[in-house]
Image 1 (cartoon, rainbow over the protein chains, first blue to last red):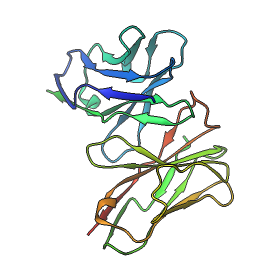
Image 2 (cartoon, each protein chain N blue to C red):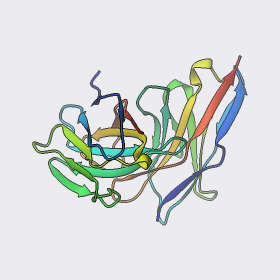
Image 3 (cartoon, chains in turn blue, red):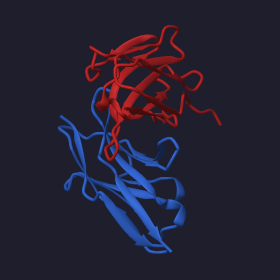
Length: 112
Length: 115
């Protein structure tokens, strides 16, 4: 069965510094992987998706993620955090039957 | 930009009462999903529709929850009777055809509080 583990429930960074949100997945095959962001009182929004093409995936708002099969990881990064990046981030694995399996989320706090 | 609509945004009810949530997906999206998100956790799929047919309701507590999408467009999720443990955010999402790499578009959710 597919599963996803977000290694940090909370991450704090200073504005202008790099962001790293960690995600490990478990799958019996090479799955599709996604990162979604959830701002307060707003719906979940897709940041980026990996679909077995390029292993380095670029998304919206300067975010990118690298698929590493050997490490079963799909970490989300951004070179420079902005105050507007403060939100909850979810790593998602596709389960093989077009279903999403969500991680438990990482709350990103950006300090001024 | 097209969005998934949900109503109500907030619902407070007493246990043993019935509640219903409504979702209107993006026009033309054949696949519709209902998720439950408990505070501090990621969303969990309750039911998935392809057009008007249920394709997955394995995680839906069928003794108290029901969902329908009669004309393959909008959908209603019902809980009867509500229990304290049902307090959560209920999210609706839609996608074009439900493929493995299809982006799911999410509505703002309905926050349910059961007293």
